[in-house]
Image 1 (cartoon, rainbow, N blue to C red):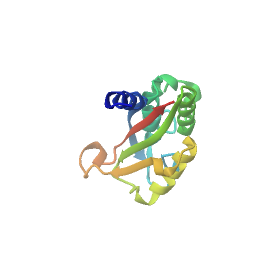
Image 2 (image 1 turned 180 degrees about the horizontal axis):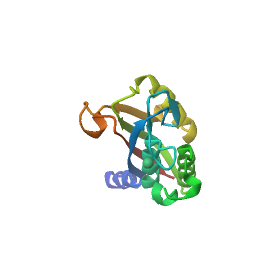
Image 3 (image 1 turned 60 degrees about the vertical axis):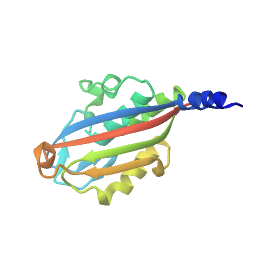
Image 4 (image 1 turned 45 degrees about the horizontal axis):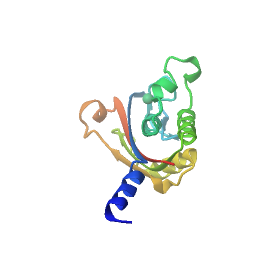
Length: 173
Ligand code: MG
């Protein structure tokens, strides 16, 4: 194989890689507990939404949909549909990854960021990564998770809003 053939082979392989970006936000209100990353966290805050408002699972679901060329979460699971009211967002995530796999896509890794002032997520990161890995049937080592505050500024810093971001790297077989 000469160098130009090698380059073509590399490009053919690399073209099977796809990146997807998912972003979501939900308002916070007093109450609790908090649903985040598929687990329940003791807190005096909860997220507001049509489903269980799990901002992190929504961002991950959209990142997978995007990488796998699927409709987005709002198209797959409309937030005005009665069957999605109060729904466990794990259902959305599992359905999305099943559709992606049917299309020949596998997850290489996910990288996630959650932005909220409190509660602190450090004590819960391992449980969240394990839960997401279990839902997606991948290893926790394929999931990066970072928590950032809003530096006590703006809607995030004053605990009125939570945001989540996820990039998914996927491989098309
Ligand atoms: Mg959402």
